[in-house]
Image 1 (tube, helix red, strand yellow):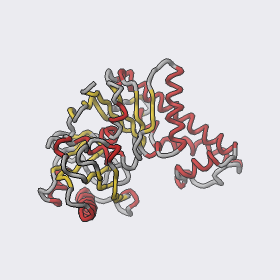
Image 2 (tube, rainbow, N blue to C red):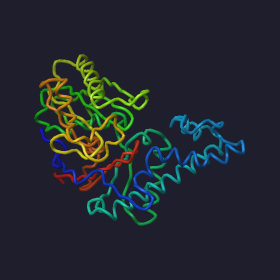
Image 3 (cartoon, one colour):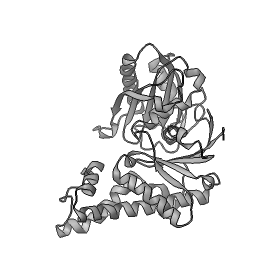
Image 4 (cartoon, rainbow, N blue to C red):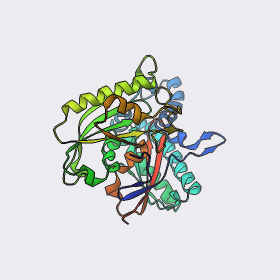
Length: 337
């Protein structure tokens, strides 16, 4: 099966991984999950020195989004004000990214709605930042709406994998294996779906999930070790599957996905050299799994966005932004519109 396809069931991927630079570096890096915590850390520095930090001088890298949400909701107006300051700066940066995309790319210029996924979206402050970004753009006369992605951000790129396979090929099956490869962890899931309407994601769910946080390993794993670990995860999930497991496996992976399964540009955070000329993830994984599954791979932001396709039916041209280790992006056109 061809990987990284532009033409998918019911829609066309007009582009993804749009990368823009200026004198300060990559524009997208300023609105990543890492960037938000960097903003918060900078704001807290003088407060820590003055002994008035609302997080009791805990290192910012030790804070979770739940900790920050709690500070927002706790009723301490000063703590909420500090968090709001970080949210405001982040929203301003995200608005600048959207502006830059619209100016640089003809397809982005036509986008009317953007689904926002990734880790930061899975928090109240992330939702507020998304809403604030829309407000900033609207005040400037830019009519584009940013909305939190509907699916759980940890599951969106797994469920979106169903949209990589033609619906008729999934009829009669009720389960499928899917993989989401991120900049710090790999998730593998067993999806259950309607055998009569496989692309109806409102009827789909991740019923079993395994996650490997490879970034927390003492030593960086090699490509071979990562593939072997992933194959083991999939084998354990397969053992939990029923008799109607589809003979397909979807992979959502960072980078530019070549039609032969090669990866270029954007996989630098993955363990080992995934961009090597002789490395093909689908082939490497198939060597462990055998011919039991037909493997199809696409960019992780693209697949995460596919989970939102049902909510974008009224938009001819729409996009996704994923706020994670980096800032992923993709833009689509509904072919049925």
